[in-house]
Image (cartoon, rainbow, N blue to C red; front, side, top):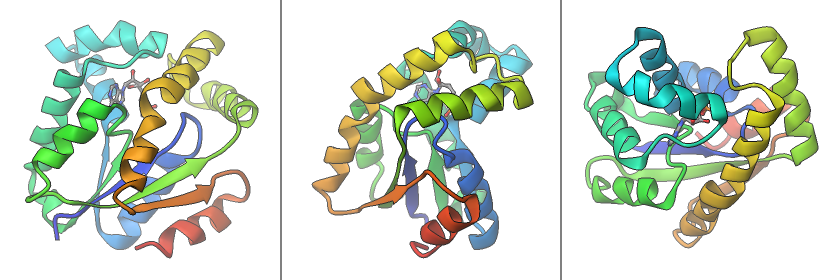
Length: 185
Ligand code: AMP
């Protein structure tokens, strides 16, 4: 069971929070490319040095670097029981890179988190006060929402063609949203 479940949705939609809970309840690996990149920035690795300004500005890190990082991560033993991908793929080339390894790591399901832009901006700004994430500024949020619409949203069609998409209303009570998502596992 090395299946992948992809959590797809705009920044601030609650993917990370839900992914952590689902992964722990269903004993799956939680793979957040954003967390991994922030760790690289903290550790001052070469990748971290390249990624830092992109993260702060809300832009995407180049596909080849993220694909390499993700592919390496999937080789870890905890991924043998299945994984939740939180924040990957974010572009068509990234989705296509998953197709290439689909014999080993098939994408079984894509859960799309839906929420309106105003709500998301509010949520992220609130989170910034709490977590101090350096990309939770108004400028960066605007860029991240634009990048989502331009680069990531087209993936919904890509996966709808494969009939593996479930859409979830991501606005509302966290526990209710969790219940909706957990039905998919
Ligand atoms: P996240 O924590 O998922 O919101 O990601 C934070 C930031 O990390 C994004 O704004 C991007 O700069 C970078 N990032 C995370 N995942 C990816 C990805 N799959 N492709 C490119 N950049 C990414």
